[in-house]
Image (cartoon, rainbow, N blue to C red):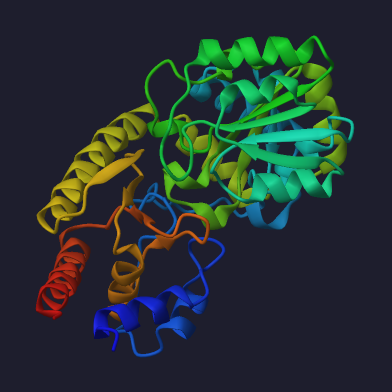
Length: 353
């Protein structure tokens, strides 16, 4: 007869895996008896949001002026190190930019460096490409469309900018396109971004606003590219793509270098605290960024289940069954709940016959 732990493992592995982080409604269905409030560690979104402030009435009552959008793009260029505001397209989040960017390459062979965020492959397929995922950077040079997430989600892998610029040049010589998603570059290594090279043809750099600033519901993101690509993307998006509230928060937060620098240091400190907490329970961090930690563990499914039963959601991966991604707890209280839940998991594991 199978041991109780083995039976539990089979039961858990048969359960559905949530497609994306942040789905607390699905988590409540999966763990109906879990205590509230839930702690959502599944997204990689900063738990310390940019400070809220009173919006001007016009942000809600009037359509955004083109001059204000241009001002936002200029501020974003300064913050990200892009050549100019003319090389930036503002959009309601990078998610909506994915299929638009993929359509800029004629339908052909799309090669995505993986494993990574699943929406890139879906967007490329929607754009008519035949999609292939590879773990070898050299396989991207033969693509019509190449996609790299840098730093990568979920493992935090970072590729050197020189390597990516060589790839962009190779693809450009064949009328190909390289899309580099820098959603987590706000907490990436200094000098790793391609933002300063975004005026090169055949290259699109995507920037997420909501993750680092902890304002995912605001829906704001940017594409950095050469002027011809900017024009095409703006034409696809149409007028008033960015809402008034997103415009105001983007202008203020991106210009707040003091907050950004202090937050980068705080996130590094809290990532180290999370690493130490996990290590106390025999869970080794194998990668990640200061906004999320990536672990490989033979009991990943059991850990996911134990944490879910305690109202703590982490990211589990259908294609990486022994891996989990932990976002940052929002302080001592949440770290305490995580520590307690992992202690209970470890005690039950040690009690198993």
